[in-house]
Image 1 (cartoon, rainbow, N blue to C red):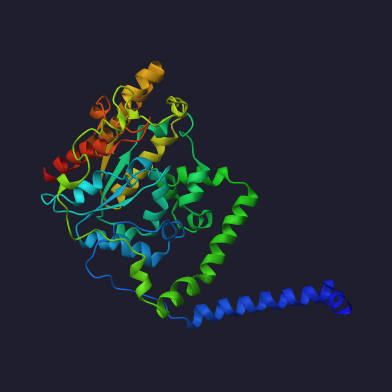
Image 2: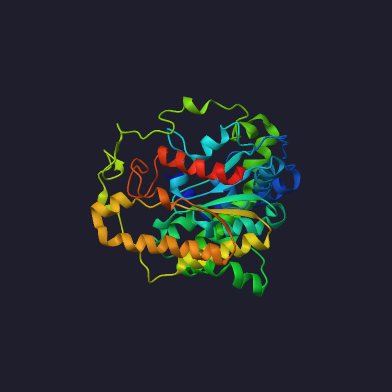
Length: 373
């Protein structure tokens, strides 16, 4: 009992805590000094995608390697939101990567809410290697709807870290041209959130020499095993399930959704009073132009058949939004592919906002035609 009383004395616990804290700091400092930085040559292979953590915290080595692998292969980086995610029956970039008549390869970064503004910090942190990068950005009009048209803190926190974004050095002019929409994210955070994200960033930075460098120095083979490359081996396009065909077993072509999609109430009309997404797009276009990035924009389709059946009066808002996006691209002299003409076609969607593999096939044909021309 005396031993327990002694162990749980406040002074004793305080001394132990202080010792542990000092020991951890010494370990972190020694690690950063004595653990050699790991570097791995991946050769001429093109990386297909990159771990989100590497981008979120701007792990410089991995991000540079990703972008350099695309440029080295004269490839394209496809950026998109959830419509560009992996599909079991393949998406547009899968078809492009397996078409022998298309000489370029396609890498991808996708995810719900990963709109163009999310990528601004990554491009600013890697200006030199981003220069002359070939890029395709998929603009989905649904991000102008009333529940998504403003800055979305949850998505910014998922793909970027506040402290990483704040660490970017910008002139006053650069800040005005590219960063005002990022500032909107900063303003959405309270003091506690900022402090937590700041601490998270620096703790990860301090221990990085252990969980990255030391790990790969000890076992280099694990580095490439965690990477995803664009396959050198192409498969015949006709081998893809339902390639170029509507999957009528899965898709209700009247509503243009999968039969098992029950959440029709997730649909929201466009909010035409908020211009955040337009400003975000213009900032991204301006940054790409200034960095000499060869950017091509896809104006994605909206599910017109579903809208007419569910809330016909909302259709005008989607049409006007798509037209306004097009007007901006024309005004900014940007290269773009208009995929809004497939909005009315049956079989193109799996729900109220995500295209199907057949929709991906139609988009693939548009990109192929654009590239070959």
